[in-house]
Image (cartoon, rainbow, N blue to C red; front, top):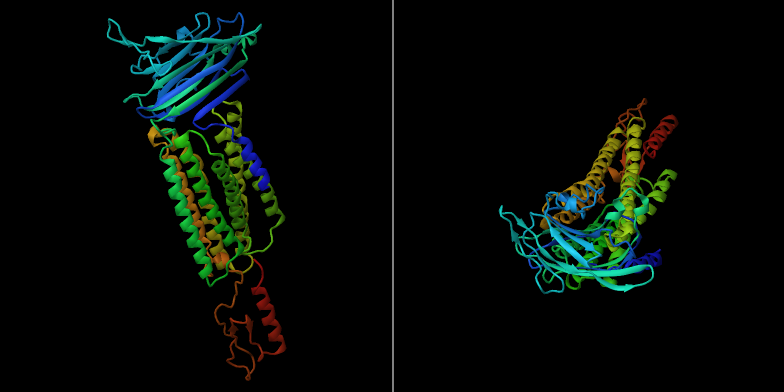
Length: 527
């Protein structure tokens, strides 16, 4: 299994992080989301389109880019909402747009890239080769400002009997007041035509470099290396505390307790490698494969260990039973492969380019499989709750079973809250807060995960007072006085020997001995 994980990690480390390189081949999408990046002042964006293949005689087709600026991810450009129209068409260029937007229209006849901007974006610095500022605001008679940006060069790099190949490049610098979340799209207007004969197969390369002054991380990610490092230290110290509790415990310590400790240390290692990985992206703009592979290996192991631990606690393994039922085994056969698939999908999602076809496919797979895993791990807890409800009404140990039932219900609520918060609330937080605070979603996710770990460890720590660990629920916890029918045994009491777990019955007659033995056996029944 470990060899498979390592081979998978090596096979997907092919993308240069914040230095993007995307190859589009035989694509028919109407628009392609190429990148989303948060820029502060003094940041720059470099975009190069190369190897753009166009059939001879089709120079009238419209292709190009759009770059919009938003405050948060929830305020995306109309591109996401109106995918049935071409934004590069002359009529649509004149329409009012709520967000500041910049358009790059490829004009193959003039071999130029025409640059237009919306009326609410008045301050931009567009270069072709880090020189010659191409921005000249023109003030109309009515006082409004329109953008009149010099066109970029659209070069023919090579040609053959069927195709011409073009390329162009631009550089944008972000000034003070222009900070925001920038979204870059590629548009293929022929593919908006309902006539399938006008559908065009896209073939080109995109190279993108995004940088905040000397930092390759987006404004939404700059605090993450420190955050992951601090959380890694916190988990490591918590793991040491857990080992100390297990070593000093005078009460039964089960295998599941050690598995919980392994989970905490795996989480600490995973966050440490994640922090180191982000650090190298910050200074180099790309992964260092060694640290990236270590991060992905620990990410897979941690994810599988987390779900295994939750399911084992939910089924009561090693606490109240030492074997798993067929129903429990089926849950493991479902949850573990799904969780491995979800982690693989998440890794591929992080490593694939935003504009690639597989990115959207694996994103949908990850969301679906992750939700299935979260739903599946609730079943063992529900089954245990149902079993305890039935047992509390039938086996005469209502008080103990009700205490166990209460603990299982609390654990169920903890799991539901953890899933709901980390999958839904955190996502809503990410898309609604301003772009420079989008990193808070990771902070709240990690804090919620840490709180879940701590509460689970506290609820199921090795102490005999916990109803979860009460395997031997004796009915005779207190001394029970039994009066006999003979003068010889009058006022003789039944005394429990708690060390040996036996009861002295020497003074009873045969019938009374048989009744007491049967009563003791019933009190030790497995619930």
